[in-house]
Structures are given as C-alpha cells and as structure tokens.
Image 1 (cartoon, helix red, strand yellow):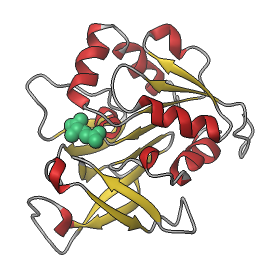
Image 2 (tube, rainbow, N blue to C red; image 1 turned 135 degrees about the vertical axis):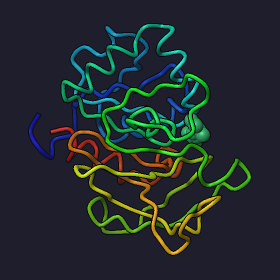
Image 3 (cartoon, protein in one colour; image 1 turned 30 degrees about the vertical axis):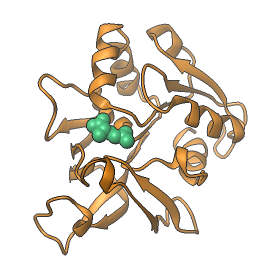
Length: 211
Ligand code: GLN
C-alpha cells in the first residue's frame, strides 16, 4: 500500500456488536473496500480493521464465544492497523480500570482506560477538539458513555485531550485527559467520529496509519 493512497484499501469492520453500519458508510464514502469481520477467516488479507462504538463487555463476550478473539489478538501483534472508537478503544486497551467481572480486551495499545468516565448516557456531550496531527480544523467529537485514558505508556502519542473537569470524578480538575491516542499502527478515540459527519479521523487512519 503506497502512503496516501486510500482508494482500494480493504478495511474490516468488527461486526459482532456496535455501530457497524456507520463505519461502513464512512469508509465506503472515502473509497475503501469494506468487509464485516465476524470470524477469523474474515481477517485474511485486510489492510486495516475498525472496531466500532457499542458495548465493550458484549464485544468481549461474543468475540470469545465465537472464537474470533485470538485471531484479532494475533493480527494486532502482527502489525495490522486498527482504529477503535469508544468501545473499540476499550477493546484495544492493554488494561481496563473498571471492567465488568471477567471482562477482557484484545489489547495491544499501552493504555489504561476507565469505562464510562464521563458519566452515563445523559451526560453525553459534544465538543470541538483541536487535533493538529489529524486535521487543520477543529474535530467535532461526540462522547457517549465514553472511556477516558487514565494512563498512556511511553510509546503512546496523545493526539487530543479534554479538560479533566469533563470527567465524572476528576482527581485533578485542572489536568487534561487524553481522548485520542496512537501507538504506531493502533489508533483510538474515546469519541465517535462515525456518527458526526466529521471524517477526519477515518481519513487519517486510511492515509497515515494504513500505509
Ligand atoms: N460504555 C461503553 C463500554 O464500556 C462504550 C460506549 C460507546 O461505545 N459509546 O463499552
């Protein structure tokens, strides 16, 4: 894949749970070929994978039950570019601060996340984020029962943060909380660009993370 050439990339969308259709729509509109991923064989030949927003504990259960989890872990270790939004970020996190009993992630991204860190559904909020690495314009970001990044390892690049005062229970209200991170081929956002019509993160994934 030549850098900057997005048309024709074959991108999988994890399709056992979550807002799959929204990601399929954006990726298709940006010129990618898209394949829903429900089994290990669906991963063959992919240039990248998107893990949608939804409910990470259900994604975890279904992906283990249906046997696709080990193959996704292996693909991540082998360097498959992956973009996770919201629940997808949780699935990529090495560590979950407040899992439900027995909840596992795929891992790969050296972060610790806290699920529902900005409060419940009614505390959902929208904001314009400065993300210079991704877009010259502020990115329209929607947070719905979103995770926060509590810890980011040394190889993790923080692309955007929000004031800690947005958190349900901030330790340090004057600090910042990362909400968009990248570690080499893994990209994750606490928010949902697939539902806003702001495609800058999908474009960034196709043009700069898949290469
Ligand atoms: N709170 C959800 C979870 O823990 C994520 C919410 C979302 O993806 N909008 O998986």
